Image 1 (cartoon, rainbow, N blue to C red):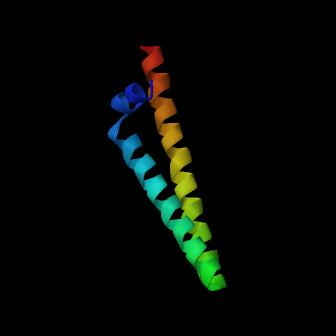
Image 2: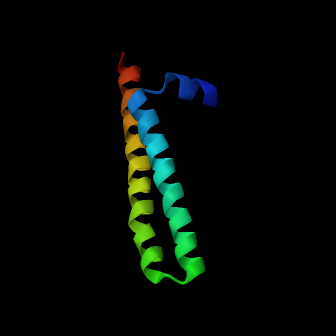
Length: 74
């Protein structure tokens, strides 16, 4: 079933999902490096990056939900 969802997904949804995953991963790496090195500024700077990634993820869910709703009306 997962293969069908990804195969029918729009390009904008795929871009949002990959961007969100990338930003969350970068934010987590920066957070780990900042905390491991004791650099509080770096650790705090990672939080907005993770937050933007989460917002992109939610936006992707909204885009996917709208497409599904439109397909049900047809």
